[in-house]
Image (tube, rainbow, N blue to C red):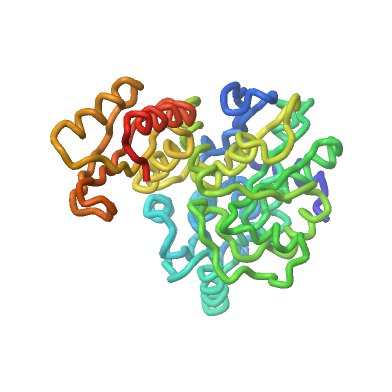
Length: 397
């Protein structure tokens, strides 16, 4: 099992490689607890992954370095490996799923790595990397299931305890389990009373399924906006460590992830990718009881594609009650639309878009449908608007 001394060594080695990300006090996303954020999205390469990759590559022998390194990644480990390899003048080949965000692929290429895009998800890229490794005889840098990689990620936990010695709960994103295994190893060795909570996306809950004793060791598929943790099967070593040191594993859904991303943008001007926001979502939506506790959520990365970000923001606005879409049936006669608009104005909502459907599916031939999107304040405001619209004689479908 991973020794604390190895994590201390990683901390020393990485001191001139990574940025020490100080925790940020958060007062709005969950006022029920004393909430802090560990912003690894501000890390070099935009993710914690550079810690594990940097430490692992620093410990290679000269012979291993000479062969070059190969890795598989959905994007963040790729950039960590590419940066560490470039610093040491080592050739790097990275297998990435073709579905990886373009921004992550291009950032990895700009760091000097050779890219091999593979159809499918992370696990498909992993299999291709293993094949290429056998063909070319390079040194494989596993993204999570490696003791030295885990030790590098464990430095995140050491920094959290240094900043928050009284922390009660730490939320950690889980994909393959490297970050959770490292953070849990460090924190449990130094302060065993801290409650470590692993967080996965509902559509990629491989660690949770495995811990619950599910008969399926590898998920047949994964589907989530949190591409950085979209892993079908956790590592053998990471599972062993997480099983012993992570107190529980929970999940968050896509709407909750989007709401967390939006909350971080609005309240802290922080950009988090889906994988980085799952831990924040867990605290925001009280997935466990955090009342009165000192809580820290690790934002594991911020490498989100801007085209995805716009969709995430729109979905987050819907989840938070900041926008709403209604299908309204109304009389097909002059003044009917104006009357509806007057109701909306009276309740202080802003109309974003309107689609008038005269040939819709309304059972009344003298009626038409109006599909409308409104900008609102919150869920209560939406309810008030709906009540006002219905009181004025309109039907909300």
